[in-house]
Length: 147
Image (tube, rainbow, N blue to C red):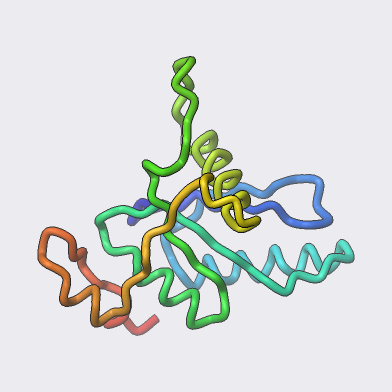
């Protein structure tokens, strides 16, 4: 996950298009986007009662995002990137868009209970994250910020 831009995608019931948006790395803006997509599904006749978000884990302090989303009643998970199977038969193009499709398929499979699609990192509490050894403990920027 980048600290500058996030690529955000979602399968939205009732919409033929699958939205894909590159946005500034900003949690409140992400929440607004998720709510907008929920509203679009509602206008198409599909009530969304559950929002689940997943992102690629990285050692750069993004567990705060999962805690922040969970505090707003959104399921949030961090996918271990190495756990997502990729075909080794052919050399494939590597783009954010293709990676997003692969991660989304793996996440949806995991949500259906097919645990072999990918594995999730345990989201530590703030206290657990702060007590991690320095090589594992990323900065914890969000909890101390006013957002």
